[in-house]
Every structure is written in C-alpha cells, then in structure tokens.
Image (cartoon, rainbow, N blue to C red; front, side, top):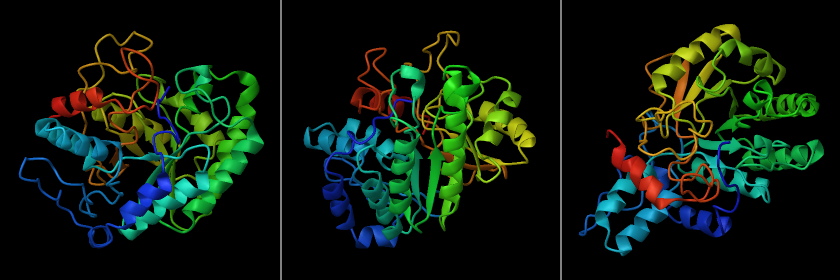
Amino acid sequence: MYGSLRGAVRPNLSTRLGAISALGVLLLAGCSSDGGEDEAGVPSKPSQRPKSVAPFWVNPDGNAARQVSTYGKGGKAADARLVHKIAEQPVAEWIGVDDPEGEARGFTEAAAKADRAALLVLYNIPHRDCGKYSQGGASDGNAYRAWLDGVLKGIGDRETTVVLEPDALPHIEDKCTPQQFHEERYALLTEAVGKLKGLAHTKVYLDAGNPHWIKDPGRMVEPLKRAGIDRADGFALNISNYQTTRENTEYGKRLSAMVGGKHFVIDTSRNGNGPAPGGDDPENWCNPRGRALGTPPTVKTGDPQVDAYLWIKRPGESDGSCKGGPKAGAWWPDYALELARNAKK
C-alpha cells in the first residue's frame, strides 16, 4: 500500500554518501539556514534544520535535492524553489533489500556526522502489501531475520528512529494478509522490536494505520500488543496517507489510552489539504490530486503524547501505478511540484 521503492531509488549509495561526507564543515556545524539562493534564484543545497525543532538528518543529496539542481540547470528557478520546500526537510530513508547493513550504516553515519538522528523505515516483512503496488518483502522468516541483522549492524550505537513495517499490522486486522501468515508476522515484529531496542540509541514505532483505515482504534490494540508495543517507544499513524493531523491526534490519543499510554508520531508529509474527496474509493490513498505538503517535521508538536510530526513518506515519490503515476516509490517530479505548490507555507 505504501509505495516506497527500496534500493533502486538510491543508486551508487556509497558514492553519494561519500559526497555527503565531503560537505564536512557544513554538516558538522549543523547549520540551520537553507544556504540561500544563487544569482538566478535557485536554492543551494539544503543543510540541517535547527536541532531543537527537527533533530533528524536532512539528506543533502536526496531525490528532491537532486531535482532542485536539475531544475536550476534547466533554467526553471521557480520550480526549483518549490521543490526546495521538500529538499530542505528531513525525510525518512527506506532501507533497501540488497545491502541493508551498508545503507543503514551510510545513513546513520552521515546523520551522526551532522549531529542529527537518522530516520529509517524498515519495510521488508514477508507477504508485504498483500500483492498490491508495493508487494514483495523477504522470502520467508529466516530471510527477514538475516536482513534485519544487517540493519542492526549498520545502525550500531548511532542515534536512530525506526518506523517498523508500515501496513504489517493493519493488514492483519483488515484481513488482507491471509490468516496462515499472522503468527509468523507477530513473531518477526516482536523479535524486531526487541533487537532494535537492544541497540544503545534507537527508538522504535510500530505502524497502527490511520483513522480512515481501521476506524475503531480498539481493533489495533491486540495486534500492537502481540507485536511488542510494550517494548517499543510507541506507534506511528498516517504513514503515506493524507488524513488530517487533528484526526490522527484524536485517534492516537484514544489508542494510546488502550496500550498503556504509549506515545505516537504522525506522518504529516502530504496531509496539508487532508484526504481527497470521495473517501469511499478503495484507492483514494493512491496519488490523489490536489494534495499538499503538511506540517514540516518537528518534535515541537505542542502535545506531550505526540513525539513528532514526521515526513515518513517521501513527498514526490509515487504511491503506485495509478492516476498517471509511475511504479510505487519512483520519483515523480510533477507530483512533487503539485504538493509543494499547494502547501500553505
């Protein structure tokens, strides 16, 4: 469902992270400005946001940053400034299948050098996405454990926030994932939470869907408990979706009260205009038009139960091959422009 392409969206990772390291002084300084613009009005490469507001790493060579450069070289300064709204914010890095250790190490090391925390998404559970746009995942439980071990080695003792397996639990509750896979999934998630929390400086949030998906939060209580919510830092809401922050907060507080007061994070990456009209459309979540960037990532949520607003879905990446979009997770410049153009800031 969530539409993030692993691995393929980050070619030549070691080369690119080497270039990031070359920024040295800028990253280590944790500069909070956006670096300004050149004479043509094209924004320069993004730097880090103020740590007290958004302590997560801004990737200066992410998809949006590269698009800004492309627009600038093509004389499209206005488009470059729009996409810079995405490039200047910390977005999650979705760990790929082929080199989990290398990717996790590369991202967390770059974040540590910038005195920031890495924000990672693990999305490789077997039987992922019920055969839909983001189908795939590890071939079986043992393959998943081996992949997870690579991630753990890559993270090490560096400060990291992990969003664990989007859609895995909601797809159990909505019966999309066949019954015969439920026990294995619970076991794998419980193991993953335990191992990740065994690291020195890692926070873990389990996905709990969104208010439009599993409308009664009470239905998510047993899945969360069976997946290890007691050891996790909390749960995540609205991943890759468009439900409003207010609705997610209300939903999250109700769910929190049923799972021991656990805190939660909300994906605000694309909910600036809320969900698209026509909520009964089963694919209303897939590349809806007229949407907007939401509240930028921050830990200053104004609510002690909401740990952060995060951009977990990477704005500008497709939800899937629907409504004219490319395959799930592919960078889609036109959609990035639309989200940025409609943003309230």
